Amino acid sequence: MDAKLANPAPLGLMGFGMTTVLLNIHNAGFFPVSAMILAMGIFYGGIAQVIAGIMEFRKGNTFGTTAFTSYGLFWLSLVAIWVIPGTNAPNGGATPAPFMGFYLAMWGLFTFFMWIGTFKKNRAIQFVFLSLTVLFFLLAAHDWLGSPAVGRLAGFEGIVCGLSAVYLAMAEVLNEAKGRIVLPIGEITKA
Image (cartoon, rainbow, N blue to C red; front, side, top):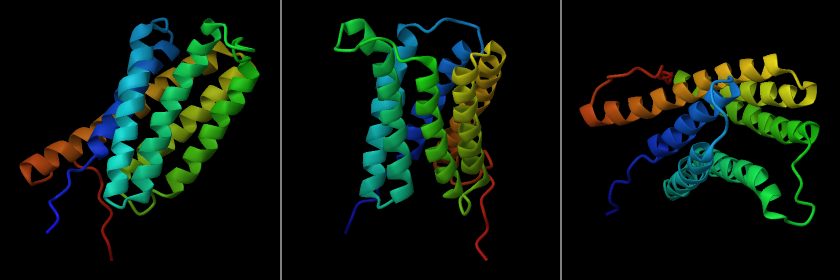
């Protein structure tokens, strides 16, 4: 008899949510990027989400595996994009903003299709993926246009996106721990 497996989604959602909030406090113009953001990007946004994705694989959840592993690797690649230019790597200069816009737009496109994959899931996860889609396209627009106003707007939108993931993570933890709905997530009723 197989032992009951823990739900890895709260770990992945917290890694994503907290890291997203902290980076977007920067994007909104409150603080510069620091080692704290880089460390969160590597360890909680990156490695913790990859671990959650591997755990979702064990549970047979293709959506969770794809989401958490991909976004964990997004955080690791983002930190690498910022750090590698300082290592004197071959052609290690900073990525030009317009090219970075394409990187972010590709993540927006990926996230848009993942959002479609949430349509039979709860409303909270739908909001996380919709707001993340908007965030990626706002960040791409910021890099393409060079507009500080679009960057600040993306920052505030990213804070909302990240907090929605934190809410969903805590709802899943508390609802399971209490055996009842403590924090509603807008479950879809199956007809």
